[in-house]
Image 1 (cartoon, rainbow, N blue to C red):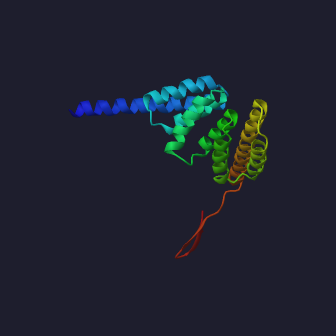
Image 2 (spheres, rainbow, N blue to C red):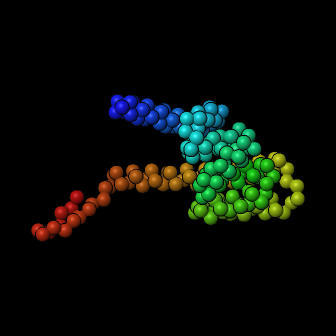
Length: 191
């Protein structure tokens, strides 16, 4: 009985390890712009572990990227039902809504995304985009695509700037490590 239980635990660990590596491959495919591959990889993860929120989010973003907006909307809504403040899900669900002409949904999701971040350029760009969407009765598909792409680009730029800032900060700390001093009975010891 104990041997069987150990075997089941080992099998479960192998399955989870397989899902984790498939998840990583899906994330790499998504980052590399290989959206169809990412879709298949995330679907494979979800077939093994349907509760994986990260795989469902990756699938929703990949579906958005290939223009499968109804499927992306459904997938991202599932993520937001379980994690209402998941920022990437809010962003991409708002972008899907722009593409589909669901301006009230776009306004809600993107405003919630804006309120959960500190991206002043995104806030300004969002306000301009919402004015366009609210102001004219009929917004062309090309204009909607331009608005969605520009909002996504602002967020991507902000993320890249933050990553560069952290890299510079890390390099500085490696070159000039901080000194920590601790008081002792005999004086201070600096590390």
